[in-house]
Length: 159
Image (cartoon, rainbow, N blue to C red; front, side, top):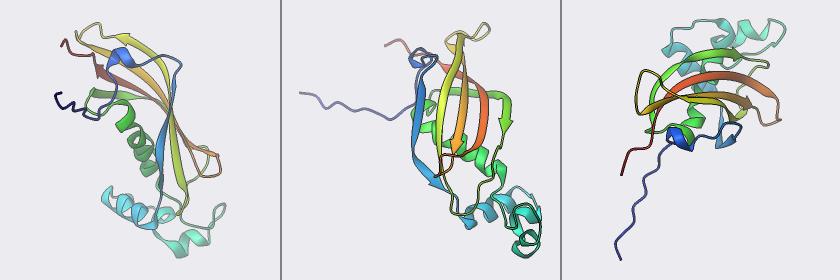
């Protein structure tokens, strides 16, 4: 009997089912270090993310909040292993991004993705466009981020 080897990958275009919801686990806990490193790495000097004293005095939150771009990056990142790892050609863009509630240090975010639409590419044979609606919730089930994303995904290779 020959050894069977299976490499982890995302889904080929044909494997995406419109209407399917993928729950991505494990979740990711946002730490103070994550927030400070991401915020300084991206040159975002907002006191809301960096200055505990100044942000602690300001309503409505009275504390530092996790950078929303970290939240968006993590939301998409949580979906990669299950959906697009090694099968994506390009991230074509976002048509909606919202942050209905803040993420705080110590919050754990969990992601899920609804497959909204898919169609073969009219200009790139062997590839297709998949529209995904990503949602992030914190440990209390509160929605903290939503993003609708269009991706270009490879079709399954002929074997």
